[in-house]
Length: 595
Image (cartoon, rainbow, N blue to C red):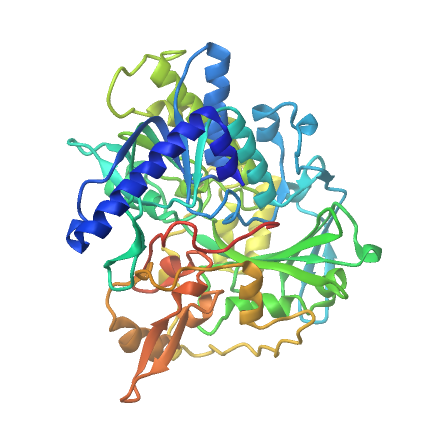
């Protein structure tokens, strides 16, 4: 969709032509010369600003830069690459959108053509679910009041933002995954290389081979979303977490479906949140039910990935949550349209790394700006993108800042500006709520009430996360651990995994190197399976991992990479950090349209 629009636009057309010629020429030479030419130099393209990831943060940055160019009479080239087959294809979120950042970026958004932000939140309900058959209506927490917010599909919103960015002259290239960060002679970031396409499982080029392209820029902004592979490599290389004195990031896994329901039970703008069942009191998480437009209902379960029971199955927890009467009544008689899953940052203020490094910066969920008590991060991601985009513009043009004449930018100006913005104060005031739940549900609720209503976010202390999520699992030999009793799917409210995966639209070319890398192939057999009951077969919401017996009866880990939803749970939760998620061939993965 955006690609065809790019081909009709002047600048985008010329840039796309160059990119396409680069791929075509390198492919022709490789097919002619053979596999030994795989390492031949890649074609290069130069931009002023390169943005990796076409999500809310990245697109907001691109739009802001082009707005400032128009306002100040400047010209900067801006490129956005996106690993999904189209903009929005890999976007999954709740989503009740707080429009504060949107108001700042596009003040006339309500009047803009095709704007999908239409359904105002109308009612808020909050329930505790003590068991599978009981519920208690609770006062809605202060942070979860949604007056003035809108129930949206975030994948629809980013497609709309992408179209607007293109109209302003931004080059957007969907289907091209950033695989490698490029560094100059002194170690500064100066762009990324897209992945080669048409490489077989054996690592040799197929007849469809296309060499990746080097996209170089003076400012490279990483907005890959939660646990982005390139952003994580940059955080590690420049020790950004240590430089900020940040706590380990902690994560949740969100599983979501969108249903079409009978008009008689559809209530546009209705917002419902739940805590408790099916999760035990030691496992952080909760559910959401949002009534969208067109008789659609979005619902999902978020599970904190610091859970300790290795028997917990994330997909089956989500399915049995839907059987509770406070959930079931919203979708009974309807049709499930789409399924998906995605990790989300839950570390908050104390887990934010240093945001800038030589040649670039971290935007949105690549840094971790989710407001956990609000269950909202789109508005903070967008604001970070706007601030980052403005900082890059000022440093490149000298408008309002000392111009950096050449070389990769020093974007410390971005961090300074963001720390003065409302994002920083908003996250600082709620910093102690999520870590309070490490003590369990009831102590966590008590701490949240104290922090919100008595201390009002002004506590003189900051609670710590202390350890990463991969260290939380207990061995199956731990006394008191038991496997949950999961009901069989009924095909009406609950479903089996293959059916749900079909609804995600996920797809990967089978003949490509696996993008899920097991560092030590012996660890699953020696440790994970015998001592932790093979937790990767349960925390993955896509059935990517399974154990199969070899010819000697030994159970070996088998990877179904084609099922991958790009949720990153394996990269986060594996005890030994033995599984590494990397980008597959561009365009692979889920194909979300209404998530």
